[in-house]
Amino acid sequence: MIRSIPILNTGRLRLAGMRYEDFDRYAEIWADPQVVRHIGGQPRSRGDCWEAFLRNEGHWHMTGFGQWGVVMQKTRRLVGQAGFFYKSRDMGSDFDAYPEAGWVLAPEAQGQGLGREAVTAAHDWFDRVIPGRLVAMIAPDNAPSLKLAQSLGYRPMREAEFGGRPVTLLRRDGPPARR
Image (tube, rainbow, N blue to C red; front, side):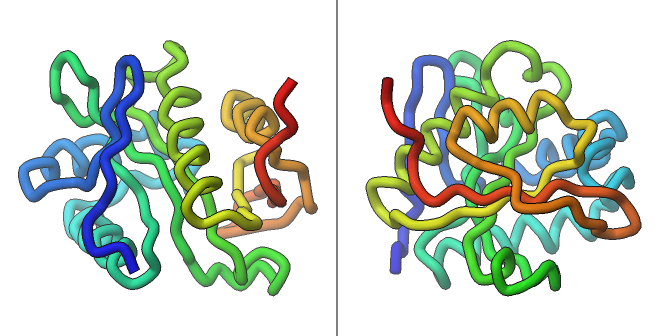
C-alpha cells in the first residue's frame, strides 16, 4: 500500500494530499450549491465535509489510491479534488467492484481547462501505478464532465438512478489509444 500520497505537478496545478489547513476551503467548496448541482444537488454540511475529508485520507492508506487536493501552483489555493475511490453504491457488481473516478472544481476554477489538466494527470498516474478498469457516475445533464470522461476513454454502461436522481454509469477499461 502507498503510505504517502504522491504529488503530481502539471503546468498550472499541484495535485497533493489534503492537509488539515485545507479543510476550511474544502468545506467551502462542498457547501457551494453551484458545485453540488450535478453531485446530489445538496450542499454538504461542515460535519459531512469533515467525514469525507478524513475518509479520503484513510482511503489512500487502505487501498493505495485516493483523491488529491487540486491546488493552483501560483496561489497555493485549493480549488477542488480529483482522483479515485471505492464507494459501495449498490449499482451492481459491474460498477461497485471497481475504483470510481471523481472530480470537483470550485466555480472560479471551472471553464479554464483545469479539470482536464487535473483529471488527466490523475489518470496518467493510475494507468502507470494501478492499471485496470475504472468506473464513473455522472449526471446526464453535466455535459462538461461527460465530455471529459469520454476523452479519457470512458464509455457509457447504462442509465440508472442514484439518490433519486438520474445518473449515467460509465466504464474505462484502460487509457484511450493515443493518436
